[in-house]
Length: 454
Image (cartoon, rainbow, N blue to C red; front, top):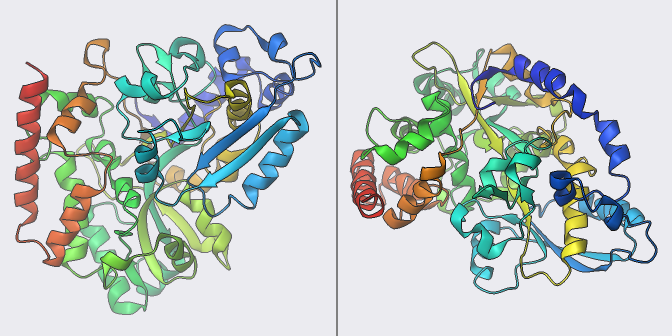
């Protein structure tokens, strides 16, 4: 399903195509024992792993790393209770990290990075076998889970998405209404107009950058695919010298960010932004909009006096074919530390979390488990006729090349640096223009491409 599908068709397709794979209830029944992700790939070991086998109960202490600082002491504790009903001899501890990707990448220089963790997005796929336990073959796991290819290397899967996201912009409907914005913007200029109206007609911050958190800046990156409207665009970047050129998606995406800051349509001091506070502020109508994945919808709704005030729109870009596309794909992928001393217990948690916790739906996202019902939080996409689009996996010959060139060029598609650089330039804190930055990134990319692809 790497081709483009209207939202309604995706729902119908998933429902119909995978009807034969069993319903959610069927899966719950099947996995009420101890079916592991590895088990789904080869249909073996389910009896061996059955926790009802009193001779070999799964046990051990495991530490689960998570980025969900907001619910680690509440929702995750309830998950642990439910898990322990099935696995009473597994002691689960959580470690919530605010700067998740940054801190975990540092810890991966040691063996101490938890037993179960969310794989940082910028770990090159060719490095996955060095850090993570194999979960099964992509051919087998892709029959049960979406986007298994995103953390697979050489046909082996190392991580399963915890949530499948549609990418877009979180916004406060009431703020838009008070500002006089009656229709959702479909172009960058229309979005800028909407933000100008919020600035002129309300007390709210039109757009909140979340500069300081760093990882939040990476929420812009998937929109290269939204703007391209092409499932093969990311793969094609390996064949071009100027992916940041004026006619390329990166230029279009980040030009909007630059213009928002340049026109003063953001918070007064981006250097002091507060991610946790920003969720409450958009819920309270103190912020108009933020670029975030669909996972953020429920988080904001839970903080709002009226959850209906929280809306979600696609990235404002209408393609040449007249359509609006929204990139979709897996959120963080959950994997197992290859150095874990209790891999069996870690596998049990990973499998239960993906298949039985209900985390993806609870967070308003799309479940990675094929056949589970589509969320109502994305109903607006259906009304706008938005078409979801996902990246095709690279060919076997080019697997890992994009990451290698990215690393060699020190650009960091999934690092905040060049996005923060754009904001700093727009604020006037750097003596370079937007085009200067784009030209510099093109120069680095072309040089690295020559080095890697000889």
